[in-house]
Amino acid sequence: MEIEQITLKNNFRATMDSILDNIHEHGYAVIDDAFPEGIIEELLNDCLENQPEFKPAGIGRQQDSQLNAQIRKDKTLWLTGNSPAQADFMALMGELRLEVNRNFFLGLFDYECHYAKYEIGDFYLKHLDAFKGKSNRVFTTVCYLNTPDAGGELLIYTQDSDDVIARVAPKAGTLVVFESERFPHEVLAAESARYSIAGWFRMNNSMVGTVDPAS
Ligand SMILES: O=C(O)CCC(=O)C(=O)O
Ligand SMILES: [Fe+2]
Image (cartoon, rainbow, N blue to C red; front, side):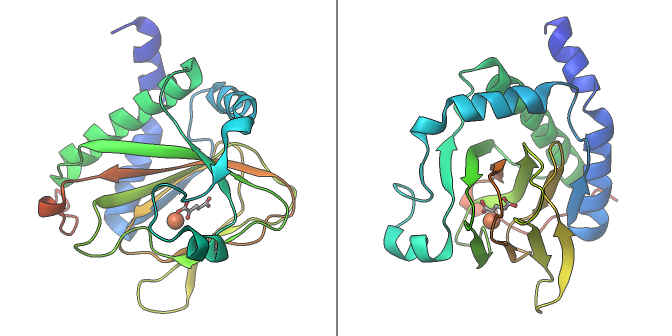
C-alpha cells in the first residue's frame, strides 16, 4: 500500500473507533470533522464538476419513479471511484466496512454511494432505507460536503414512535451512520443548496439479521 493511503487511513482511525462505539451503544453515530484534511473540499469540487450528470433521485433503481418524486426531490449521481477524490472516499469507507465486519461479526460485502444535491425546497419525507428481510442495506452513511446557512436538517426517529432522537444540521465533514432497517429518517426542505454523499453497506439477503456486537 502507498504511504499516502496508509496516512489517509490512520487519520480515519479515531472516526472509525467513535462510529463503532456509537453503533454499539445506540445503533447510530454522528461524527463531526470525520475525514482527513482536504478530502471534503476535493469531494465537493468533484461533486460540483459532475453536476450536469445528476438525475432525479431513484430513477432506474426504484420501481415507481413517479411515486418517488412525491417523497423525495433530490438529484443524485452514483460514485464510481474514477476520480482521486472518489477513490479516497471509497478507500476510507472500505476500511470502515472491514472494521464493522470485524467488530460486529457481519459479512458486509459492498458499499454503494451517490452524491446528492438538494436545491432550495428539496426534501426527502420520512422513510426507511431498508425493510426487514427485503433489502440488503444494513448501514446507511451520510457525509455532508457543504454547510448550508439554514434548512435541510436530517431528523432521525426512534424505531417505533415519532420521537426525534437526532437532529443533524448538515455541516461539511460531518458523517452520520445508522442501522438502515432500524431508524426512520427524513430530510427537511433545503433553504440553500445542500451537497452530500449518501451510501449503504450491504450484505447478502440470506445473511441479513440483527447486529451482533462483539462484547
Ligand atoms: O441526506 C441526508 O441527510 C439523508 C439522505 C437519505 O435519507 C437517503 O438518501 O436515503
Ligand atoms: Fe434515507
